[in-house]
Length: 116
Image 1: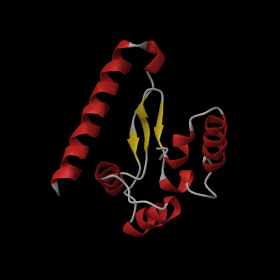
Image 2 (image 1 turned 180 degrees about the vertical axis):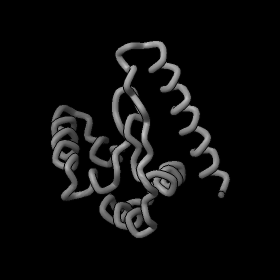
Image 3 (image 1 turned 30 degrees about the vertical axis):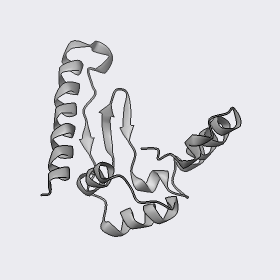
């Protein structure tokens, strides 16, 4: 495994460990159990980059090579799968609306951002 993937793998494990501590100490998150999704294929990653018109950062690409999304990895929330954020995905319309509204109020830089 290359160095970037190994570092990403270690960071993800530290997040999972931290969430376990939080869930043990805070009733609000008692049932939070992070769950990794299977890796994204090279083709899925390339298609996403084509949709975006850019090359993904090495660390995000490494994450996708390990996990194409992760339920409960953030408190509260998920790291989304490529299928959900690409055109036709279940979250895509919300991302498009958020970017449009944010840009309308003066923060056009979000139009080039990646939502994970």
